[in-house]
Length: 480
Ligand code: BG6
Image (cartoon, rainbow, N blue to C red; front, top):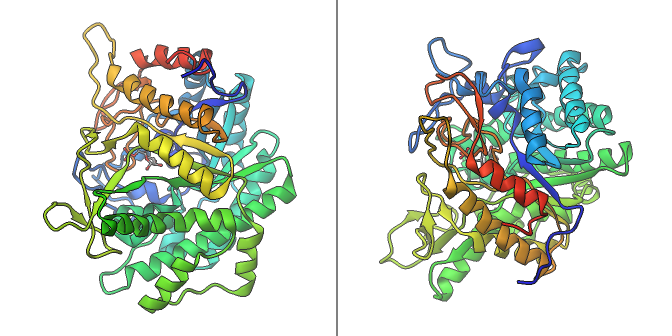
């Protein structure tokens, strides 16, 4: 590789989400969110979604890492790290505690004013997701989540409020975090966190998820248009979870299976970026007899609200096969195919397949598909860390994972010509795992003293990876 590196204005940063760090779950008028009723699970043990907050149950997001009260101290560490951007979300329920009010909660708005001011004072630009699994619980209880079209207006009203308020503090926005996680409706946790949906066993899961997704895509498009009217300088993106799915073998049937599986993921960014519902989806709905409610005005809204950039998370790749002799987990939408372990890559302790080249592949694939600027807003390695008796955390595995991914990202930018705005590794500070609710699935370069049961002092400590990433940023990725 030549000495060429990232552009001078490349946005090096770190990413988190409000519900995974803030705590203060009922502070200063905040309402109950869908994340506040998720108990702790474990490695391989699913989290439970309870009916409201139950006495005696442990909800790890209620306190999280208490960023709500400690953000000034944490921002000093982010500054020392050299972050240029900090990606977080606005917790919808701080602004509209129930979600259907007409007037916002001023104390919630003030919190984000103070947080963004503190970041800017320290030369760190906030990058903000509007909905990162923090839908007001009331919108589930009363309206049944995003299957109800009223949520489009509630979301637009919330977005209008915060975009108007913070337009001079936040340039980069994203609408719905990992909107495609819910594809297929297979995982209860994802349909809950993406869309506040609970689907009965007797209902057609797939049809409900497609309808909720279309409603969100309409809401997103309306917000993109509105944000440009509020301030044309704003950049509004979507946020996708890209897990590229490879054919396990060169059997043409495996290749076709991988294309079909990817269509289900691309459905979301195709609409976000192109403003039309793709023909593969329309045909599939017709074949399955799924009727989707989308009016001519709503189609128009989709066309008028195409995103400015594609934000995405990348953690791993997958492989799919139709070969009977290979064992794996069946893929719902493509019955004769299944997800299988890729023998060419290793996996983390949580079974996530580690594939840095998959990141370069994804950057190429998505840039060629849409020609829009890209932003890697999540990438990281969840691992068990050990604090030595003298208080150090030696985490070479974390820098190794990130280094390998940054190397591939550099190739995509320098060798392949992909336009990439920035890179914000996930969980720059230890936080509550979304999937398992654990604290001990750690992503951070800053350690937080708290365990899976919620015990600990919350003390912050720099891990070895902190100094490594500091150097990466300082040299603009020349020294990895
Ligand atoms: C993404 C989410 O799915 O991956 C984050 O946007 C999440 O909220 C991250 O935390 C890592 O997943 P997990 O389950 O390891 O926390």
